[in-house]
Image (cartoon, rainbow, N blue to C red):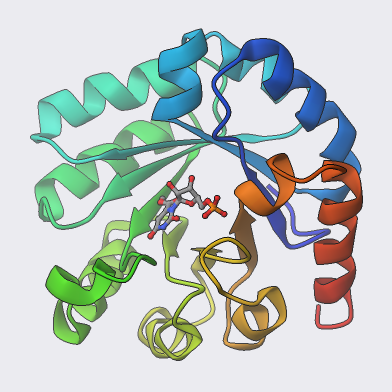
Length: 218
Ligand code: O7M
């Protein structure tokens, strides 16, 4: 996964045809496509292989189980053609390390949720907890963390915890009120954008607009 545009599409549609159409339209303006429960429950995990022909696919299953179950989930995700998986860090170091170990076996990547973007997202993910999860992600050898675009100051603080080696992907731009430019300026490598792109009359124009907003900064 290389940063060219700084944009990841959150493809939370539920129909295969729509998913493929939008992905093909915006392909030149995004660096990856994030899929999760809405699309996979709607179409099946085989959608990952179709989308991986268009862009690298990140599987957002927020994996949060015991190590053995986590490994089984990650093996399925990577075998299905996903380039990366998103996991929770609050399950502890053994679960997280099992996800990273499995990703390494497949030469794939793990992103760890450090703090969530919605208004209630900092209720349990307090400053101390988020920072501890981010530090654990680094220690476990994750590729990056997820940090909230709705709170750019938190992106900055979490960047300070992980240093330069790990990547930050940030959801919350557009529909949730976050700004792409502010998020990248705060230290994110990519913004994750869903509804503002896939819900737009012209998804391609919207993706291009966000790409242009970011390209001056990277
Ligand atoms: O741009 P949106 O709001 O339509 O979509 C944002 C996407 O990012 C959507 O797929 C969410 O499930 C996801 N997301 C958040 O919005 N907030 C978070 O804190 C975390 C995620 C996410 O991607 O977690 C890995």
